[in-house]
Image 1 (cartoon, rainbow, N blue to C red):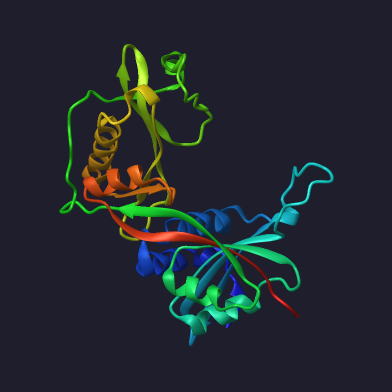
Image 2: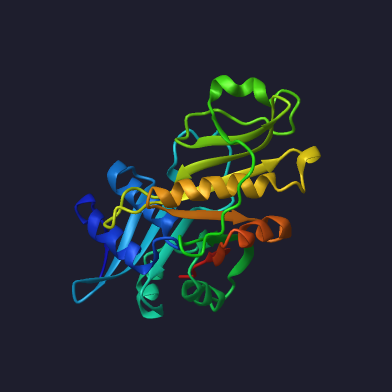
Length: 273
């Protein structure tokens, strides 16, 4: 059975996605939770049940209905989707709920769903970032430099730096290592998921940047280690991601005990009538 989910089903859906994989489904959990609470016309959550048991969830955002789009501008794809399900049989009814004869974009983290889209006729794909996480028992911290948290009033510390961050209120926090009263290395820290059934949340270390003159000194490793320790001490789950071509960043993560739990794959596909 396929239906459009309501906010009354939110906790059940979040528990299902967490059980399927809190880290792999972090962005899907966030989007589903947000969509069910906001109830706007351009977002929907489609669920699949088998004998009243939840077996699949898809988050769909209709790009054509989003307000404030500049006149004359057309999105590359008509709609975007994130999806998870217990097996391929549960994916198929969700696919049936997608629009027909218009191009959709699908961000897929789970290997089983990736295999399903790989077999769809005319589906094309692009390799995305690599995603890493670490557990307390595998974490290998490194220490050294003093690390501070920055706020908008500290913007002057970036004068003359390659990075010029935006201080919009995104809910993320910025941390940095200073050299000569200027930022040498910085990164953002922010929650990806709302509170879930286990009260654990996925917290991401994002946008790590080291100024060119301070690279290969281990500053990035020390900053990521510090933030990872903060996340683990708070009882949450750290996530770090990097581009496929960024071998140095991948090595940094592995040095600290992180392991790759998935790679995002982006599919584009048009369902035919």
